[in-house]
Length: 310
Ligand SMILES: [Zn+2]
Image (cartoon, rainbow, N blue to C red; front, side, top):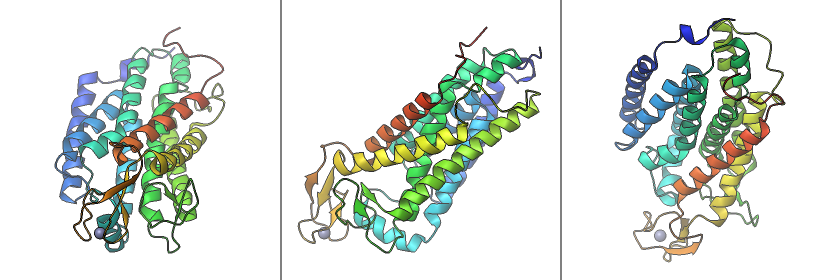
């Protein structure tokens, strides 16, 4: 039986390499306006822990999420700047709380998965570890974040007004809880894309480490399908929570619905029309990624339970 752990670099080496890589990517993102000043340390921690503990497969999946989201943010940016200024309480640069809300659950799952992987020594165990619910939970959380971001970035561009997911009432684009067919399709595409990337990288890593090339039979569903489903479900939960729990204000002067306490369009103080006080978009994103990860973990329950060691 081949010792898989023997080939691995010491944990501190991997952490150091990924600390440098995450810092470089985060500073580049800061320069290009994708991260705010407070978002930089949050992104560095997220990247270092995810890749350092979970492995490069998980780290590159996170980078795929980050780069694809940033590219979509820039797509037809002029049109979106206007919408964001009217509706959202934040700009396109992600701050600390946004990074934590979108990446916190995935980072925690990657850490738990990585800690379990450290006890893996045989190829049989490695095969079983690929069925780890923490790995699926990571995929579900990241797929939810990707689906939600892709849906937001592409959904706001739709010409027809989106509808509130709860009542079906037409609302202005960009408001939380608004859904449209283009946005939902973008969510499905984002979740599937992250699932395919993650499963592809895990398969590549298994081949590189000399593991079995056969697909994992103990898992009831392929990881890509689990990520797709849980990511789409998570983003719909995001919309549901956005339409119910999240605080939405209305500007008394121009009647616009917004997430801003003071309407940037005209400068007047807004009034709360629905939602719970204190529940903003970050809280909703955190709850949605948590839901996505739980759905994925439930879907990934294996026929042969993984216990860490034989
Ligand atoms: Zn106003």
